[in-house]
Image: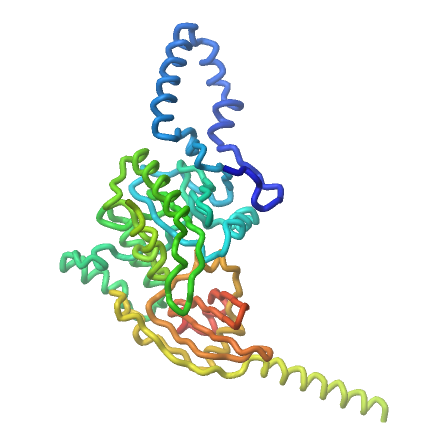
Length: 265
Length: 126
């Protein structure tokens, strides 16, 4: 796997804040360290080595929100990292509508605030672009899950329709009101939102004529399957129920992420 | 005499300048489409824009890069579309209910979002 800087520019490889906090800036941690006995250190070392062995069987370890593996290039951008993540309930699959990973990375580099945790290029190279302990703005306004799945109770259905058809309000405001209404529900009664989901972007262009995104390459499908398996295992997610196409859950091009979802084994 | 001629020329130039600005965006053709497979399509079924509205949109909407459009645009199941000539180039255009819009001509692709100024002038798009 190549580690060549794809932009040939001075990209900042941000250290996750908690790494700095623990290794450099915590006097308490230093004090604690000095108090640890030799046997404790040996015991910790043994446990760490066991953990490393069991994690290496999985092909990855997770440290300070970073997925460490030969399959993942860590290139995080603090511009797209926001609040601390709540427990992860789901994974959302996105398409970039860009021809290459470089254009997406370049936007992050220039300070774009929206983005997802991972990016998979055409050759299947996986970039981790944000820590999974941080929220990324990747979902947008969410649709009503019970309306989309025809599972609303009568009262709930009426409430949502009232919000959708409210008079004297613009479309964006009405959509925002539905999204807020949904956000107040507990998962899985609602679709995932930014604060409880990991976003994966897969490079691919949107074709306006056919209304679909370019088919993911075999390398992208392999990489996505590996990544989804690793993240599902890490967060105890069910691939049948906790994996979503962006176009299903938000007001986006309907086909966004659907071909990816159907490629998950 | 010279002063009068100068004033006349300046007036003509200014007037021509204003005319050319107004004519930079020609009135477009407008058609409408609705994705009735979308369960919420009824909320925007009445969405429509007149040719003059479309011109107002492209005069006032913010052009954004593809990344911002991809993440920020709200794509509702109702849109209007057609062809429009801007500065001599014939584009395919589309504007979605909610204010996201595109212009496409051969290899040119532009994305727009209707923000504050645009929404104030064209509330029916937002």
